Length: 253
Image 1 (tube, rainbow, N blue to C red):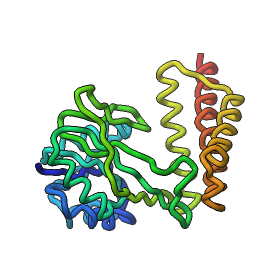
Image 2 (image 1 turned 90 degrees about the horizontal axis):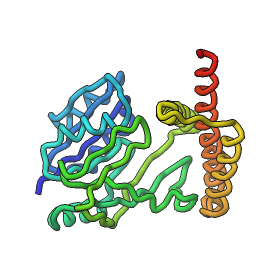
Image 3 (image 1 turned 30 degrees about the horizontal axis):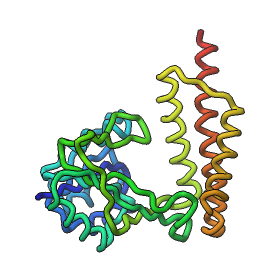
Image 4 (image 1 turned 30 degrees about the vertical axis):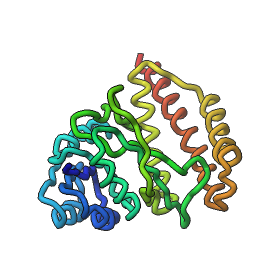
């Protein structure tokens, strides 16, 4: 059964080559670019002729749906440029596609601020990434998109880690966090939702306590503490962004 590795990318020259070098076992690599201004496209074309550009960004879900349509194989392996397929995971994938239709979850191990994070609720961060083309597909969410799995397909675990090289530095974390917060607030506001700053404080505090204490983030050393603080800040920002939107909406009326 043919496997298509599918990627959505934008300005990923820093990561892309290392990612694609771990995908030599697949039959097809499909890359959908969102308007890169670095060497992303040139690097992608060194590995595949299945490269397209869709720069009218409509959210992560829609972009993944567009990328799925580019796949030429029977199976889709959805992967991001900052991820790497380990040897053990590769062997698990090759065996899985011979067993008939199913959706497979991959255990993701993240490298962040100088170490692999094995606690903090980050590992094993199982993500649904291997599935038969046309039988499962991503929803159209602006952010935090999900794979929609029909009841007819089982969800099964794979062995072997998908390595995830998350944030280059704190600035990179904050930039991505701000983008996700805006998209989350836009999505919620479109459904008529609102929020208060008090909710942001409570959810942020809850996030810190859950990550650092309940999920044993303290076992990840200084990085675990930093991640718990940053995650609490990001959670507060989501609710603050939604609160601001609601206030702006009142003023316009």
